[in-house]
Image (cartoon, rainbow, N blue to C red; front, side, top):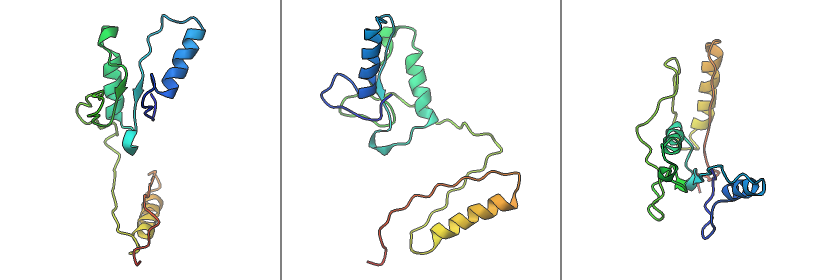
Length: 140
């Protein structure tokens, strides 16, 4: 899997490196399938992993789609793998929260404090937070 698209080349960089290494080692008997993920800054999700595994587990090598793209609807090359149904890989005991804020109103700091409070109050819990914001000033 590569996280890049090399237009005009015979394949993506990692795919070409693997092919070259196997050929130099006289391992022409190994089937190699190359694909792309994460294009357009898309996260790589369990649903995408399942689509790749389903593609690779086809009975006949000729039926395995290679090259392929996963995670976006590639309307240019038509190489997208179908993603199937959403997957929930989390245990039922896991609670997820999403906090939204507009910036400059204190929500980033408040949300950081909320995560700390939850983690400190429930000693048997683990907490994790990811904050995404830009550096633009809201007041001009």
